[in-house]
Length: 142
Length: 142
Length: 142
Length: 142
Image (cartoon, chains in turn yellow, orange, blue, cyan):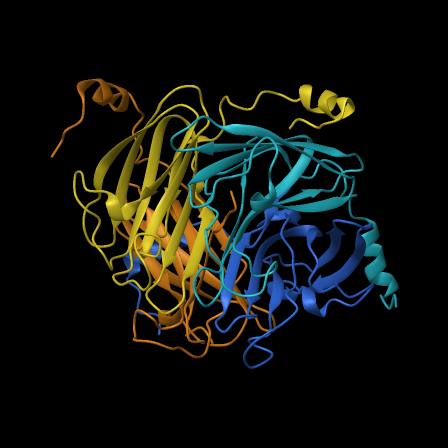
């Protein structure tokens, strides 16, 4: 299906390679809250909170996630490995080791990696009849 | 439940420590508006506007929040202390000293701290039958 | 109502002044679209698209807004003055000089100022029975 | 309709030109997911995922978009040309060359350009009775 013009190919051929060093080693998500109820078919419509992590490198990314609360010491690290050239949409709902994230409780999270990654935060809230969504790029700390 | 492989532990052990200097000293949220009505059970479904603040430091964070309007001088500072390694999801609805934030009125806010923090802005709008959500990382000013 | 402890006041008194140089001189919002229909009471529930602009300076901000389209030359500049220490939530729906923004058509916008400002983008979409909201910090171009 | 005061024109006339070098050459969107169902009239209410790209330059932008998955090698590049001073709201739903994006599957994307661009990510999810929206500025990688 490559129907591109030769002239266009020339432009794109001169662009830099993309895969190296895309992102940051430390990220923070200040908002965090897993709603307690849901409406609609699961698992798609289950209320959830996600950290989407892109590893565009040619090496594995070893991720450490730490969760902060308002009234107790942080929990973590949660350890996750992402293969080279892969994305992982981490659902906070599913984290269990060293401990599950409590529902209906405010938290924040910090995500560290040994290679540069990109992190985006998304929530689906289906507590009422229709879905609500939020998303933001996380804070790149370095 | 630590079922990690020794090989993985090696990767994570070599990562830098995360807790120091994560964030920025000054943040701004240009959007601000507390809706006047709500639908659904309170306090979870009460329409509200939040500044989520993460203090990942080993010291207290002393926060000054100033609120700007379209037609009058700014109000503030609102003073908040966040303990070491804690998050605080500040509801603008609940701020009262030096003055409550007016409902149904446009505003912006600036948040300053004596140690680096991370700030994210979230609104739940439940004026109509279903929730609507928005969220964004705030602007890191320095 | 200042019921703060003297110890706390000491911390905050040593913080830097906030009002100068907060923000950036150029901002871009790549997303732009004014929905054509609305549900619910106006003007609060009218579908709209907003650029929230904070001028935390002690001087006026002179703003130039330019709107880009997919299929014709940009329109602008739209000129707006924001007084010192004020916010302005600019509704794209209300811009009229040099021309109104077409409804139901993709656009982007660039906002320039002669003093640093902070810009956040918000949309309320009330075309279906419940509101939907989106918001993001704009891109700070310098 | 230019009813501006001469004094104001002076302020704006001294502002820098905006059109050059606005943006970044590499962007990443870590979140990506095209919902499988929709409610409401199409094409406006069709569930979709968009990368809004602003080319504020006086030259064409040659864009390369690469899509990353959780369980297979990346697909791309998708090649797109954006004329000078134009915006393009790219719907991931419509990408077909070299391959369509699978529905109901997590992905991330990287967008590279030979001139600076600005990228914002938006999703409309109409799987339930009311719309849900999310949007965020993408991550500017350099």
